[in-house]
Image (cartoon, rainbow, N blue to C red; front, top):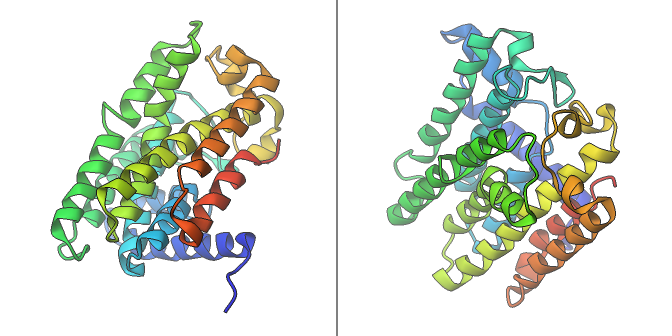
Length: 297
């Protein structure tokens, strides 16, 4: 049987992730109802599910089981969505729109938004720590450690702290890269590694996939910076031009638009080069690199 074309595969995996999240999140009929409603409101029915797509693609390469990948994908998305909820709050970026609908603190209130992020963060580790989720408990422990490190002060949260401290400053390209390797890149790297750890790849293969993921993480941010500069609010599903309005350093502000597009192409090529030797099993990872670099600019 021939493989699905990429657009069909992506739609299939996005639907798969949505179904898994619907099952994984507490029902809004369970107390505390308002909190659970807000968790489902912000998580379901939106986003491109790039991190779950990376989990599924890496997991396919690694020969991982479908149920394990579904849980790993949900854990990654819970962490990602929690970070968006907190990022949108008045004490951070103060945004009113996310994924084309009102942000949680607008739809509900600030206290509910804070608790929604907290609850989604812990939901991720509740899911990923379920006994027997991985065939090998050592690999499951490595996956938990990978996600915790990626989400914390030496990963996403630390990158966000650097980002907030950098508003109004002129960073070098190296400083900007360091920030985004943590803020955006850490969780994307974790997505690839969680999918891979759910299978049986050796450490050499994991290292090559980690390099792919490092390139993809930076690529994703470069493209985000380009889109923030050139796309409109309707296309983005969030407020366009926010970075420039807030005087935040971006790849576009440092390198310019043309050089940022060149950098995106270079990162995509380097990511794909990291997959040499994996053969047809890495097809979806190849395609995801090209998809990320070509997002509507």
